Amino acid sequence: SQKIEQNSEALNIQEGKTATLTCNYTNYSPAYLQWYRQDPGRGPVFLLLIRENEKEKRKERLKVTFDTTLKQSLFHITASQPADSATYLCALGYGNKLVFGAGTILRVKS
Amino acid sequence: EAGVAQSPRYKIIEKRQSVAFWCNPISGHATLYWYQQILGQGPKLLIQFQNNGVVDDSQLPKDRFSAERLKGVDSTLKIQPAKLEDSAVYLCASSLDSGRAQDTQYFGPGTRLTVL
Image (cartoon, rainbow over the protein chains, first blue to last red):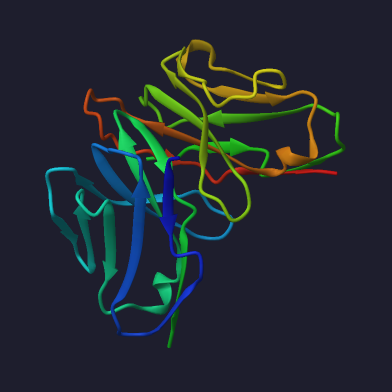
């Protein structure tokens, strides 16, 4: 069956450290993958997109990798801040359709 | 630029009642999506419109859910009759549809529905 797995437990890290979130998938072959941030009571906000032929993408303190052999994407936030605390969703893309994972809660403590 | 607007923000109803949600996408965005997000899960696509035509409604429970997008702008999603398992946040999103497959989706704040 098709599955998208993100860390079900919350990730707690200290301010200034690098947060690494994982997205694993089974029985999908996405053309691209997106990461979104969702704050309580709000809709998801787009962060980064990476295509199947790209290994790595960066944007400011954010970095995402995409390994189609391992069927895994890693999302890194460097020099994390308490304001980075949120739920982070990965989404597999086909055409203009997205299939979302359940998300990982990140808590950054000062 | 104004974002995606949704109303109401919260709704509480009894099971078997009906409810409707409204969405106004970003101006000029051709594609509109309705998602259902159950607590602790990611958003699940219910229906996708391109202009006023339905592109994908494969996961819409058509015996109780309906949606329309008149004139290719605003959209309404209706549930009739509601069940307890319909309790969720209903998110509307829109994208430009520039012809690229990976257009960014912009989400509204959602409507939190509680069915008692």
